[in-house]
Amino acid sequence: MKTIIFATSLVITAVFNVSATPILAFSPEPLNLDTIEQGSSQSITLKGFNNSKHSIHLEDVISQNVGGSNYEFPPTLAPQQNFSI
Image 1 (cartoon, rainbow, N blue to C red):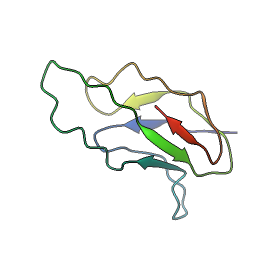
Image 2 (cartoon, rainbow, N blue to C red):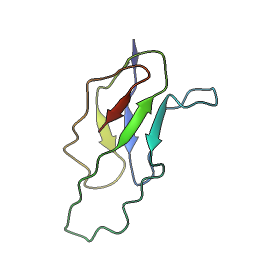
Image 3 (cartoon, rainbow, N blue to C red):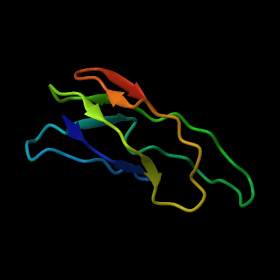
């Protein structure tokens, strides 16, 4: 069992394998949110793919920015499957 915690930001940060193929691939990368006015909010869906041959168990999803909250994410990312956050 692998446990990986990853963060979202204007530039998406993920945990990568030492090989050339990332464990988690995100689309689109980078995710362009344009300008968000102060005091307003914007909901996004982050889509990705688990490139590994193992399930990845998520404990938490965090933001490196101010204001990111209310993340909905699956507890487990199945191997070789798409996911959404």
